[in-house]
Image (cartoon, rainbow, N blue to C red; front, side):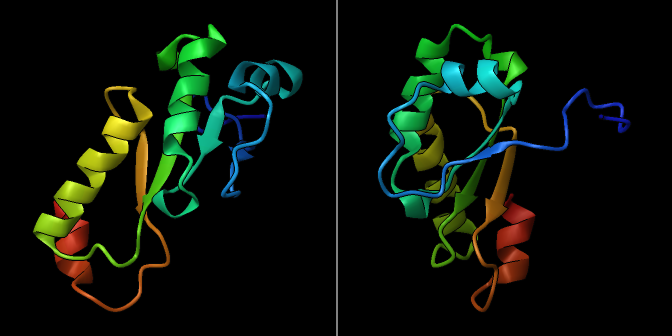
Length: 115
C-alpha cells in the first residue's frame, strides 16, 4: 500500500540482466500491478526497456522508470553525456529517477550536482 502520496507502490520490477527477459513490460505490469521499472546502463538493456514500454499500451506517465548511470561516468560532462545516452536509448523523453550505480570514488559531488 502506498501512503507516500506519490501514487507509486512500494514494489517494482528490476531488470538486472544483461539479456532482457522475453516478457513485455505490459505483461509484467498487468500481472503484478507494477509500474516501476528499474534498469541500468551497465545491464545494456535500456533500449529493450524503452521498446517494451512503448509497446506495452500503458501510458508513459503511468510508468516510473528508474535507470542508473555507470559508476565510471563521474564529473559534469561525463554525467550529462551519460544521462543523455540513457534517455536516447529509453526513447521515453524523460527519466523519472536517475541514480549513480555504486557511487564510489570519482567526482561524486560534481556528479550529484549535475543530476
